[in-house]
Length: 325
Ligand code: ADP
Ligand code: TRP
Image (cartoon, rainbow, N blue to C red; front, side, top):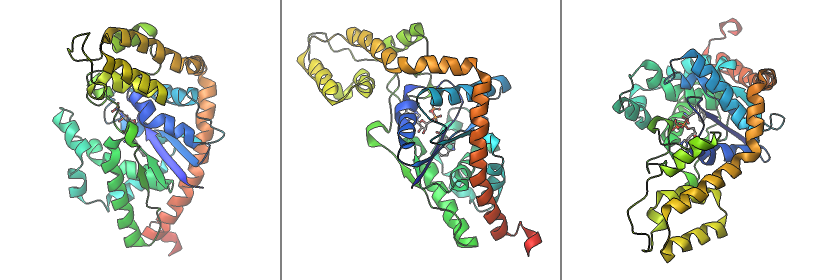
């Protein structure tokens, strides 16, 4: 069975871009693959410098995944920092990572351009990500398009290691779904915590309303036909519809007489209802820290079994296991 792995940073409330871009697919995978899913709290430290916020974000991200249907009996689900082997592997991999490879990473360059302090953690971010993926011998890594280059870096590093020390790591494939590769935010740019243009999955109704009403639309007069393919509101709404639903919405756009504000009001209800069955479970997990802790502790135990075996081999091959020479 294929091993499918991905992680998500607990650096803010999870939004529908995260859900349609990554979480939904991961949850589906638990029925057809050997699923490894984790909360990337080490990675989040490159942007969250607040202990309470990181801890709460980690708990909320884990609760969200579980509430949305991730089943810890079917998948291995843990918090990144509960398996410290990932740090050891990061160091080993970093000694094989050319500076130029990291210097070319868009994600790093973009964050620096946006004014983030270019610290070493941010620079080395892709190496930690490679360690996440390789430590668990992952075959497939489902991610949004923004992570494509990080997967290329991972493959590159894995090949370098295998070449230097012998076949050790599975070379993973990225899986990017074109339909949902980039979910737009309320302003039409990629939906992202860092742009403040998100619609959050488990937000309260008043905030949901505010966010949906703020979706930017064009100034086409009400009576005129509207172009669904350039409309941000359409691009968000369609995520919640099945095929006939999308076609019906498209027809309303093309027919003219459509008021964007009516569509937005509808969309508020649609989003609210879509996540309603999961909201209660999310709140329950937030109120029951012990249950969440138990699930995560057991997940880390399962993850550590695989991580330990990989590190054993890495220590042997690299000569860290000096005692066996
Ligand atoms: P953010 O950009 O809000 O900080 P992350 O970088 O933590 O989100 O993304 C977590 C996961 O969700 C990744 O797999 C990422 O590719 C996916 N993702 C995030 N935003 C989007 C989006 N707007 N469209 C599609 N996928 C997304
Ligand atoms: N960098 C990813 C993101 O921001 C999160 C992540 C960390 C990840 N480690 C990973 C994704 C390993 C896939 C595999 O979305």
